[in-house]
Image 1 (cartoon, one colour):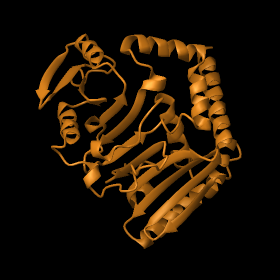
Image 2: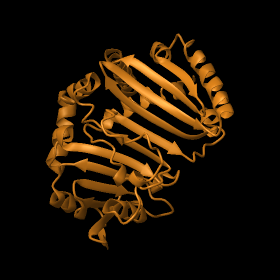
Image 3: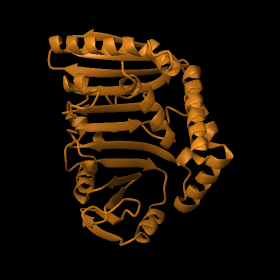
Length: 319
């Protein structure tokens, strides 16, 4: 399996945990009925795990702690304990159509005050809610127009988007005036109570460029689903590819097994080899499932090695 595809489960998990410190299980009733893609992180399930404890220890180091203190002084809540959820989804392949729902213990008045202080703040009513928007000063102008951030608050949720229509549609789902994933049959395995997953992700109707090295497998799949977690000191992950037929699934299986075999030969990349050796690939009718089981302690060591490598690269770049 090539480097990108090999690290899809483990790499996505590690990257996701790097920026989110707390979450809540996927709420299917909060997601639109037919998303093209979605990603959910649940770090309430993460915190007590081996990997979760390592991440919290990293956040307790002086440099990270100082940054967290600055964030807390601005937003008046602690990322480590008061940020309870994040679900990112979209109804088209375009990232601009994406919606981010953040679940947190926040002060609504404080967030509104911060929004009102942003550049060129505006607002508009949407039912019982208000959609706030302001210029995103971190992004470059497109065709002479600066992009904007749109946001709304409903209960313990903050909804973000790059388009007002996307935030409005998300509010309609949350209010029950638009259908949600709870009543549909899309991605039925996701968001099940008590599944203990830290990460859940899925995509359908995928349109990938021919130049994408993973396109051969993904283009033959109707949908792909990814789940990750930790159980019994074991980091676990599973990626499921759903094909049009058993025959197509067989082709997907053959390609995946070939890529996995190649990955095991990459002796210059011991971490990739370790992940490859922990993966098994099976076919069940029209489904191909890649399962990963890795000791949580080994996963932590790999995260430490990756952090050390990046630190060394950063130091070398400064020189």
